Length: 178
Image (cartoon, rainbow, N blue to C red; front, side):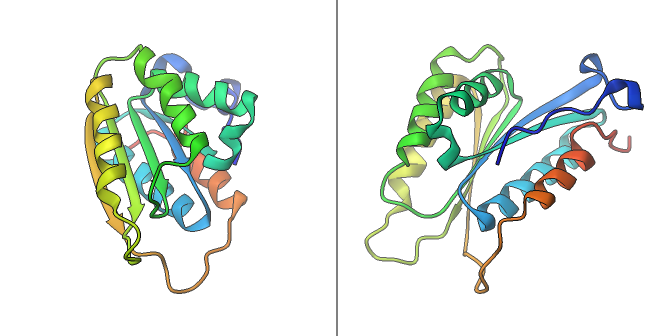
């Protein structure tokens, strides 16, 4: 996934001054992309009366320097950061590099780090380690912390770039009802 560019203000969309909520999403695959989109939409509906700007990256893409730099910059300024991933023993290296890039240099006070992770069903995976790592990142960056575990869908989920793009248009510059 690539970062989602904002719409053109000349086309009747919100200007940068009108944005009330900035959300950064980082996900691992099709299923976790869906979780990240759902979390973004719920957050926008519950927390914001104005325009919302969201950007999304795939964890694997964070290995590319230009994607990493863009995602780090966005996370430093975001109100809400959503990390959505499959169960694992340790953080993926690209995700670790992204975290290291923004959390010591966060420029915005407050906000939330929301994590949606696959509920570990394998005996060799303990999500407590990752939860504690991310909880520590949130605390050190002055962010609130929200942790949710979900089972992976039984049916394979296909990565849908169009879903992310339609999600972006629907939530990036939309005004939420008062």
